Amino acid sequence: MAEFSYQIEQELGVLSETSRGWTKELNLISWNGREPKYDIREWAPEHEKMGKGVTLSYEEVAELLRLLNGLEIAEMVEPEM
Image (tube, rainbow, N blue to C red):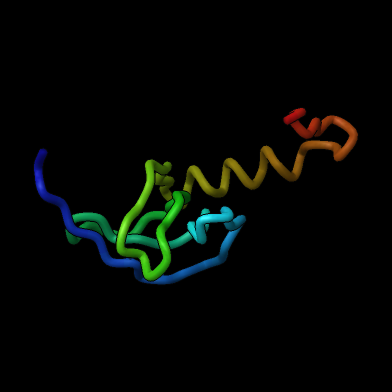
């Protein structure tokens, strides 16, 4: 597997935390020295390990926000566990 580097430029917030202490976070991350992008993924404490996630450009975050703002709370359904 190819090596990669990352730099967390800005920690924007924690969305949730598991019983193991991992947190799902929204951060601004520079991957392989490129321009930072918005990133949602799970992180181990101290950011020593990471799970799979999704990386979004500014334009994609703006569109996601537009879509979320257009939802009526009554339309949102919490999944049954």
